[in-house]
Amino acid sequence: MSAQYDDIGEKVADWDVLPVRSEFIEGHTFFKALGSVREQDVLDVACGDGLYTRQLKLRGARRVVGVDISEEMIRGARRQEAEHPLGIEYHVSDAAALAPLGDFDCVTAIYLLHYAESPEHLRRMCRNIHDHLRPGGRFVTYAFNPEFSAKGPNSTKYGITMLDYPAAPREGQAISAVLHTKSPFTIHFSHWSQATYEQALREAGFKTLTWSRPEASPEGLLARGQAFWQDYLDNPHAVALRCER
Ligand SMILES: C[S@@+](CC[C@H](N)C(=O)[O-])C[C@H]1O[C@@H](n2cnc3c(N)ncnc32)[C@H](O)[C@@H]1O
Image (tube, rainbow, N blue to C red; front, top):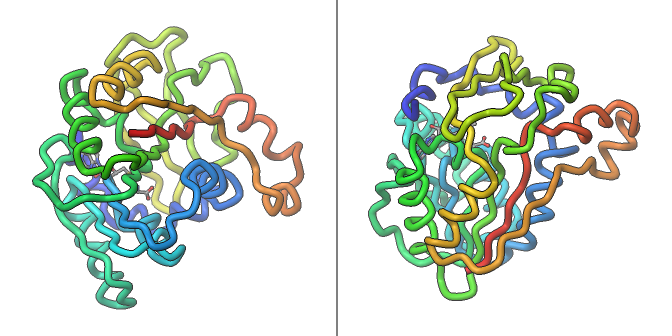
């Protein structure tokens, strides 16, 4: 399941323009949960082609390292680093099998944990992330919403469609979703409940876990109006989670 992004390749090139992925919702919610990274060392796991990794650096982070399991995604991230150097390092690795990369003030992971293939895989990801943090550090992640409802509005008009979403998904059940980029593609991941995520994170050593639902930024409200975002806010496809070490 994790190597699927090698095949997706360049199809992610315009995914930042999807309403669901824009700064109006996802960026705003994620960076609000994260707080300032100025002068901090940040490890961005599941960095993909570096969309957020670059933003972390541009927001004043000191050392920024991106890691992804997909060689294709890291190739894209390195290409952008070569074209517009920001001083970001990129590595190919499964988050569950990370070699030590140093100590960080903060680990981020935008869309990682639902790619865990088993509770043990999830536990290893969480342990590795925890072990890369300095005391007092934080892990801030964005993941598919374990409480997404098949009865609620789907997110198609925002750029993503959950396919045949089960009424009551089982632990580990395979879920698929289509991203409506110029060349649409389907992604596959696993359903894990909030309790399963929390257990893995607490076992890894995280003390305080704070979930937050997406919210529209003032700019997003100005640009599209509350009515445009309401269906999404009522049944968001993803949520943010901040974990303190
Ligand atoms: C939806 S993409 C998000 C990329 C980037 N964080 C962003 O928001 O643009 C999910 C990424 O997770 C990576 N991934 C999936 N399983 C992983 C794992 N076990 N370890 C590291 N990366 C993984 C995929 O290769 C893919 O690049």
